[in-house]
Length: 560
Image (cartoon, rainbow, N blue to C red; front, side, top):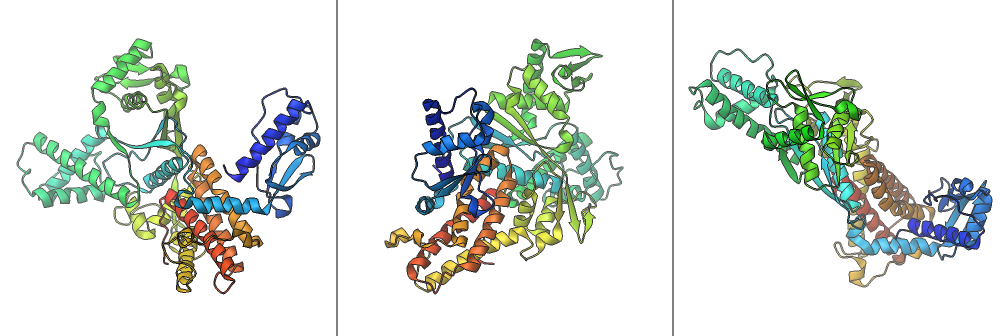
């Protein structure tokens, strides 16, 4: 149990004792005991406004409630407790409490940052899911970074999570891919062609076609048109999937499941439609089948089967989400672009009609990304003249910077991505600043090993050394400890809020707190026991920085 949890438990026990004594009279459900770190050290290590929150419940002044709680707190955690203002409770921890907490973290070693398994249902997180018809662009990159970081964070928080990519490999976009590659194939082999009006014009289509020619030459040139179209379509699909997966791999994004939309056609779609018909959720009008989604919050009803009998995208999405629920996931999380906002009501309406709990489907929206270079907006790829591919961004700024910059801001806010800042090797670049802190700690370890204080790769306990944490009592040392103590709660909150930006902000603040420590606290040249204690604190700091960066999919270099 973390120190913060122990304080909350002590307050709760004191409240219950006061209620049993009749000093506080209970009339409603009590809120959780919220604790915050005060902005100034003189206000204590932790503070709570619980007495103010419960004044109406107990029908007593906040200060009186705080006094009753304080009188009944029985704990060896506190040096003292002060009541401030109208009823704030400020807690001052005994010094040995801080050192015990640090020792628990130090003893946990590589396990620190992995919270206990919640033994809950499995949560499915589906993200990216771009059409396999072109390269991933920077908008997909934001979704890839956010989705993979949320998966990492939720797993660290103890949730059971499965990640999935939904491959949109059926429908009109795949027909357009076949037609586009077929046209480029004929063109590159010297044939005169009329390029399809709505074909894909990107340079990546030419690249795909060139790779097909390099492998197969002219062998398809004299085939009947429909046969060549089918073969080239299949080869182009395989090539696009390979390139897409390669980009994701390079971006440190891994999926547990790749789900093909083709597996839904036609049986699973037909089964979903028939179930909706039976529930009265679908009706026939003008030869098409309509989903009565307006009854469940949509602005109008939607076509699911066209007059020609072909299913719409919505029909496939209904079947897909039905399939998800049928696989037994306790919660579904989708990361969608902000332009899909209106799609939520119709999908949730269908799930309700099918008898599922639509509240278990949660949508995280991703706002737009704007790239800037030298203060000017960058909208087009230099090479392709289209949306900037994710691989170009990785080539320019590196995977680490790309991922961290995507994750610095909440997904529901627009992101202005400064390319010049992302490439800079200065303290102004947040990812460089954090990584430099990690590399500096590693350098300190190497210097300490050369001085004979430690042995690299061997922990103190293996050498029979017990760090004397109580020797560290300066402000810089205590501040660094307290910042590390915050990490488990940050993971818990980031997981609950689907907010990787919390971890990005936390690890930056931790690096900044370390920098203050490094400025004020020498390691080499001080008394040996103090040096060993500070090195142990740095070991915990180094692990925490690396663990947080790993959650974000960012590397933690030993040298810079």
